[in-house]
Image (cartoon, rainbow, N blue to C red; front, side, top):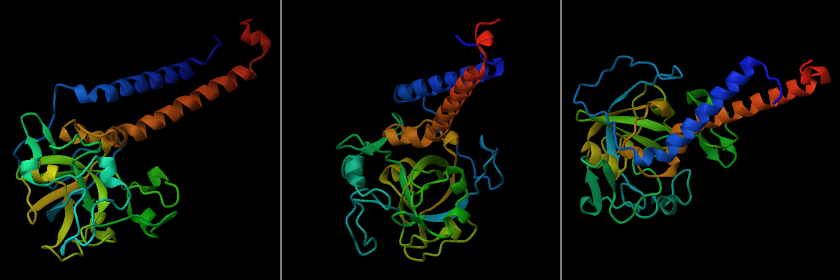
Length: 292
């Protein structure tokens, strides 16, 4: 094996080990016997919480009216847009696996087994999903003009033109002394341009349905006992903050959203280290290669 600088070799070993551990964890997460769910009945704190691994903190949006929506929902007077597709997924219902029937009789909702889903099928996507009233994409290949300025993580992802950085984003929702985690999968209710509320300090601009400003899935409703028209608190969280729970039980997309960014970055870094090693090897003389 060619001589490699000790620091470079150590870095490659650490990154490769980290990749192997993450891959093994992702493959076995569904079989984990221990479920960690923050359910302590404590009043919500409005002060700053401990920093996330990358130092990013997000504030709570407090006393926000929630309404229940579901994949496959048909148009009504209060919801004129069908939910067979989302703002970012033209085959949302098919990719999910079917109709996410909100009827409690058609659902599994069991805190003992940590299982919250439709009875009729095993969902292929996370059944803990939400909609918020903003879309960063204006049309195919084009972001909204303010997107790069108002979305805190936009520049970190450096997306291609018109590629959303919102789909799959994790949030924490608090109601009745219990919190859960969910992913942003659609836009609404009613409006898709309210960035000053979603990312800023403004109150929601929508005034329909008691100023509704977050749509929640039936699984979230059941887990938190949060009914349409009731208030909740919510905030963005980094993927590394999301504990294992029913929101990570179904759907490969969850592992990608939770771990994919860091995993991919480490893979690219390992590839960089390999190229650097090869360059150092090629620059050595024959005597150096033979250890003379």
